[in-house]
Length: 370
Image (tube, rainbow, N blue to C red; front, top):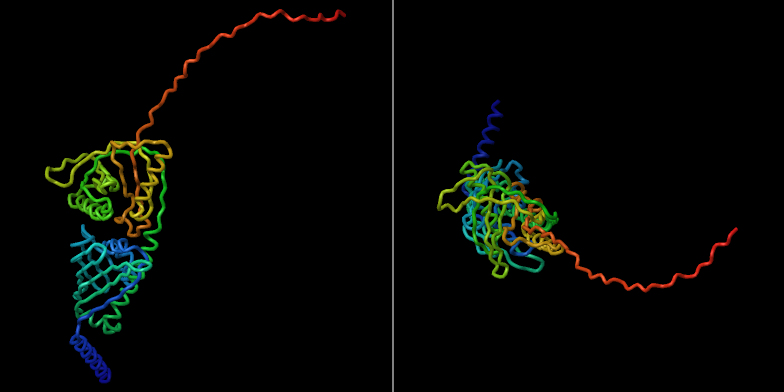
């Protein structure tokens, strides 16, 4: 028994000594990794700039399957944030500054390990050079963890390397895998809805949708309202010459609701209309092509767009249901006019009576008499 006590004491002393040694070590770290992402710079930047996409390329989810993510209303650009909780700890990240298509500065706190995170994006041969850097100070638990795993540079660096490789694969597959099907002429049903309307550059529509749709969903949850269908967008004006559009993000409701004056959320009603429907399965970056194919169908079939009505995009499966862009489903409805029945009246025909000249009857040979 005495030997066991000595062994136990030695183990305790060893653990204590190790703890003291680790705790007194310098906790600062500066880790950086770069990779070539074979996608355009704007595509890579916009994808990284939205925290909702991090689940699709971050290696930490695979390393910790129990990890859960929590998203606020804003997950894009300045002030955006998200948080997580897993078996190895919890954390949160917030975006401090953004320079469009160039850089992102973030602040993160992972179980007491505080760091500044920097992303830079540069055009290069074959795609975009992405540099991911983290600079900060380790908390006590991370000091111990990294000490047994080869140091902070190895732990963080390996995570960054795996995640950047996933980012390249994700963008290459998820954003480039899509299908477009023109369904033809349909009757779009109507109903009541709540909406938020803005004027926007056409190029900024995808970015604004990623912000406005979650905001509308949050409004419904906050006010205990029931969504009576999938969110959709009404395009009221679409000026391609000036590159500006006016659109509304709408969420269907069962019955009409009256909103108090002064609110940026208003009520509306969609009247049923005849439309040409097109279904896009894939990322929103392919919507331009989907719209083009729809207009080509209208022209090919001698149909006429109803310019008095608003075109519509309905998001039957979006980022709210599935993180993978290749699985998103968007329905496009372009209103058309009903064909006017044309009654063809036969042209009057002037009948000229034929002049008949009386001719003598031809001579006939009588039948022989038997």
